[in-house]
Length: 236
Image (tube, rainbow, N blue to C red):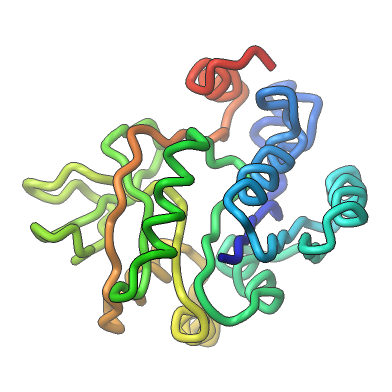
């Protein structure tokens, strides 16, 4: 399995709220958030981990280059992009063909839950993708998920769907080249939001399965850092 991390945002809200670290380097359980993700993926037997970071975050790029010197499977690109979808497009060029799991650097989850998810996706021979979902809603703009009785994803919605309970967890298990071809189509059409890409996957008829996590958090504000540490039972 290959993995990818989008870490190309500016982290402007954290900086405005007094957080001294660039978002990817915020300490989480004794490691920078981005280092924690890399370690989790490596622990899942990652064949490769591809990361994109923006040009302004030189400390983050230096950290990643240091990690890459000790971890040949870590691939780093440094480029500023206008949106998360464009960041995905850039990092996709580093991904080998086959299954991959993509997440953003501020997505917080329990490692044991993630391992079960990754193992389930790796073992599945039918679905085009496994998308992490959760019924824990603590997001400013959640993306609601429609699923059928077999947990196939039928819709992505900006508003709650009747009889549905899940939102997107921001962890995408997909397969190249088909998912990347659809991404290219979105870029060519001038799309920039990841939720529109997810809608394009459904519109293209991909068999996407929802895989529930008990809780997934995003670190968008200073207060989210302590919330994430408590969730993970760590102090720093």
